Image (cartoon, helix red, strand yellow):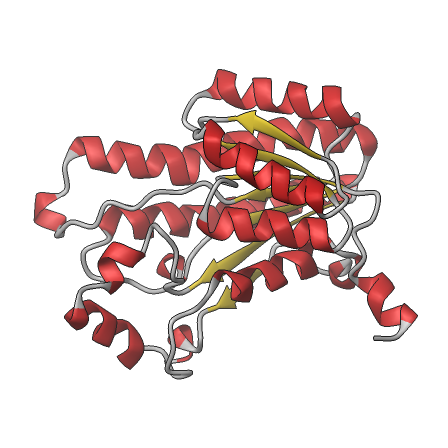
Length: 257
């Protein structure tokens, strides 16, 4: 790899905060940020998972601070930002990854599950972006990467709340991109299709559902966390400096239909 090519994706000296960092996509994105030179604020509800991620990042020669975070709790978000700024003085990159899904037929969706999905995937994401955005506005720079889904672009049966939340994420991404561009803050989203993670493994163990996913994926395979973490590094790096308000579909061709 040439020096020029390496520098375009180099995150050395950057501070990246990643929500939902304990497992799945969040863990892989956190490790990818560290591989490319960033120090990481790893955030999640599960302390034991965070400690393991932080130890792995530290072994890579980068700094890591594990911070407990419940994105559905605004006070928890504020404490996370305060802890990150206390530890590193700033946040250069935010990856809004924390999310949940409660598949149900539309006629059976409970208010409890609807609120859980919307509060985590949309409300929590927005208020994380807001809290970190205030820090970035003060410094007049930053990169925010929201993890959306192909379900924010196309309908998927049995996922009314999830699709609603991710459609909201896409439009929140565009609004924040417009409002914060004058502050040199880039706001983009990654919209994966079904990626094999602890969140999706129970669904993908159903042969009929797995067939449905593969039949709708032109590339003919289930995605992996690394498929998404590479896109996250790109959007966090100087290689994407002329991009904002973009929804980057990492979906094996699902939405090309």
